[in-house]
Image 1 (spheres, rainbow, N blue to C red):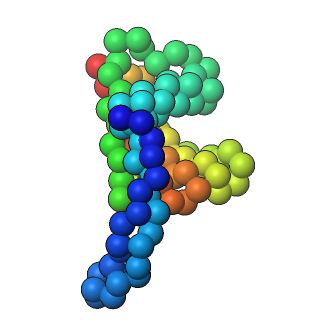
Image 2 (image 1 turned 90 degrees about the vertical axis):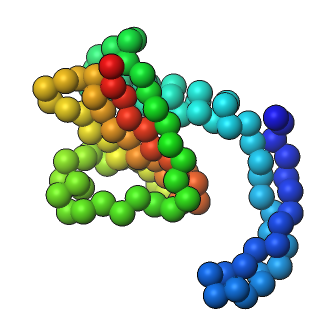
Length: 118
């Protein structure tokens, strides 16, 4: 599937018609592959070692930002590139370095996450 701009009518939760809005459909397989590479690259950047090549990286898309508890936030580190352009949170299990979790925000409009495991 190639990327293409499409228009759809949008409605608020209360049913108010917001009129036509533009949406970009993109290649979901390419999106997932790029996010897996981002996870592996950021893992190396932050932990100064390669994520085990046998580790599987599972990517999820999110319709809105993930709500984290105070306890969850204390378990993660947060960073950004270009301010609000790309923000992310991450953490790794201290007992099993192949287990990590990642949360991504692109322009505060597109959210995704992932985790690695053997």
